[in-house]
Structure formats: C-alpha cells, structure tokens
Image (cartoon, rainbow, N blue to C red; front, top):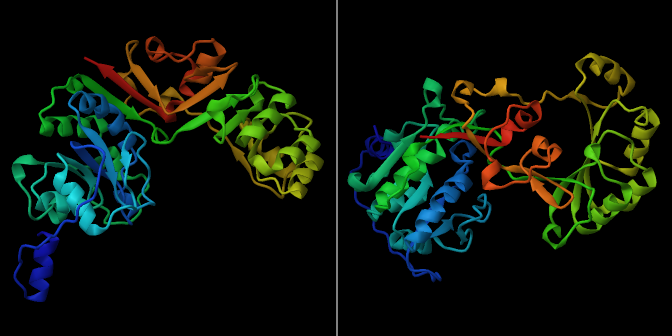
Length: 387
C-alpha cells in the first residue's frame, strides 16, 4: 500500500489532487535537466551522482541540454551542474522542475513534484520499497523507478545504512535510463561496470613534494606524501599555498612543524623508523598537532601499542585485487577510472604504480595493471569492460 493511501485510510479521508502554484526563477539556459540528491535520511543520498553527471554530460551537451542541481545548501555539490542549492523557495523549486526536461532524483519531495507535473524522471529507491513511496501522480510511460537489489535483503527503513544500499544502483544504469527517456542515442549499454570502490565517490589529491606548488593548487586541500619523497624546503612552499595533510615515515623537524602549524590539518605517522620515538610524539602533542599512528607491520603492532600506550596505533591493511567481489570479470582489457590521483615532479598519475613507473595519466594508460601497487588504490577505482 502506498503511504498516501495508508494516511487516507488512517484518517478516514479521501485522496484529492494537490494544487501547486509555481513561482518564476531565472536561469541562464533554456533546456536543462534537474538533479536532486539531498535527504535528511542519509541512507537515501546517492554517492555516485558525480559519476552519473560525468557520464551523461557529453551526451547532454551535444543535445544542448544543461544540468541544474536543486536542493538545499547542505546537499553535496555535483561539480558539473549549475548550482541553485539553497537559492530557491518551494514555489521556485516547483517552477524549475516543471520547466526541466528530466529529473534525476532520490526518494524525496522534488521527485513527487516531477511526477505531478508529468516530467520524465529517474527515481532511486533503497531503504523502502518503491511501491510505497513512488510519486502518486505521475505518467507511468515516462517514469523510471530504480530500486537497489540490496544483496537480496529486505528494505531497512533506516535513516542510516552501512553499507548504503542505494549505492548498489549502478551509475551506468541510471545514465542509460536517463538518456533513453530523453531520446538521446548512446552506447552505454556496451559498458559493463562491475566494481565501484567504497571511496570512488570522493576526490583525493596526493602530492609528492619534489616540486613547488603552482597556481592550480592555491587554497586546495592536499595530502603531502613525505614518505614517498620530497624535502623540507618544498614542504614549506606547499604550506604557504595549501592546507595540508601529511603522511610521513620519518620524524619531521619540530621547528618546521611549528612553522606550518596554521596550515596543518593532520599528520599520519607510519611507524618503523627510529626517529619516531616517544619523545617525538609527545612534542607533537604539546604543539597541538592532530596526528594518527599507523603501521603496515602486523607482527610489530603489539610492540608499537605498548611503546605508544597512550595513543591509538592502527594497522593498515592495503586494498588488494582479492578484495574485489567481481574479480572474475577482470581481464587484460579491463579499464579503470580513479577518484584519487598523485602528483610528482609536476605530472599527474593514476596510482602509486604509475608514479613509480613514470606513466602520467592519459586516455591510453587507463587499463588495469597486475601489480600490488596498482591494486592498493582499488577502493578508489571504477572497473569496467567494454563489449
């Protein structure tokens, strides 16, 4: 039973069609789709809309269609969209949706507006059955309801999920159905995306400080991989341009740490070198540095926890090829896309393996590599085969 029908039954009332009065809102484009990805229930928020926008953007651009993101200011930003989050009233939101050619959205109010205005939509469902909350007034011929498979489980009806079942909906499927509704020809059905890392929806930039920062990094938040190279001079230059997270396997000079403290967000310390001792850790704590103690050596974990008894020491288990659920689909022609990159000597690389082998990012270098350093970042990868 639909929740509207349940409310009507409980209240002893008839269901009447609502009256919605839109209010004009100016946009610099005439033809556009809307995307909404904001709910007070985190379990309904889809983490891969950035990827969806990336996939469909070239097709939309060729058809003269823009992407507009609606919602409240706190909703996660979709970079390729024209942003009106937090800038519209409910009536103006209704206007934008009524003028859009399509809505991509989660199970929330804008989806119901699209249904009421008979606007084509692709709706995503996860923590409850789609039949219970599908837009009650809609044109079934131009609406697509995508429900998570939830690994065969029933809906949780929970505001938070771990893992989030909505993320089990493939971005390629969403993109295909959206373009189909718009009547735009595409070849996306030939793409079989079979792995989305848990961190693929995030964007991370790592830098080996063996070169000075340039204008593209100003005011960015980067992670300096001091464990992979670089010196104090470049560290100071980076601290003058960016907020920093630092990964190091050797003790940093305390005077240098004091100097960059205003720009220092966190230091991740990889234990093992003799320069990192109890006195050094106490010095960092006295300076007010936010730091983490980590090790990749399971045999030494107990000893480190005794030595640094007052602080937590975590064991790092690097991601590997064996951690991928659909590893059987991996072949020599499998492609990957990454949300994490590393810069070294001014060039950009897709993994630590590519940096080590000096293979900068390019369209020709996006096939998987059978190397542990490559698979170490697989939690940031999208893996796919092309028929």
